[in-house]
Length: 117
Length: 113
Image 1: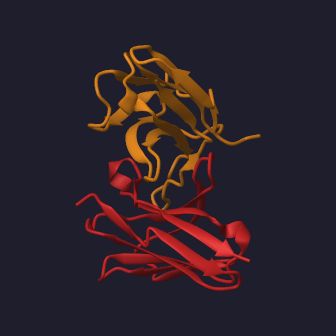
Image 2: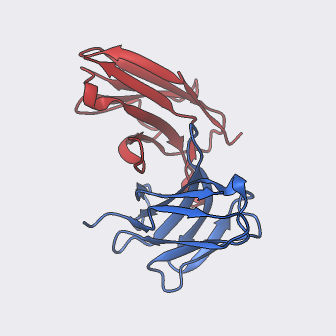
């Protein structure tokens, strides 16, 4: 399977615990995006990387959230001191390099569903 | 100004009918408008996309109509099938802002046999 993969697919944790999710993008995709989706809503942008550089962070990304993409390949998203409001589907997407006349098509992984008890 | 508004919230169509989902945006700097299809428990899958210099794009049974002056675009699904039952999201992005997608609220489509 050459699509975007995410691990784990499901995570149940207790309030106050730390969790880490991993995303493996499509090979040679230089951009990687994290989104959060709550039930009945569209995905909301959290942050994105171009290669290893984190270029933008949404105001939704509180200081309890941190994301890395150490070698420009896979990425991790860590949530510290989880709260019940963090319960959501965390989606990762990747896109290939874009030329002057192209637009970045984003391809999504299956997501990690987080439940905070 | 960053919002994308989508309607209807839910839609029921008979098999073989036409499904139409509409989206409206405010920011004229948006330059890419994709539609995604999402099944329960899965990530969104890119269906079809359009740029603002084109008024219509067709791929198989799926057509995007784009009205730049009205700042609206719509997805038409011809000959709708039960397998099309899913949630559909419109989105918009700007290339000079890293291409992050701003999504609509979603439309839950149910195609009855």
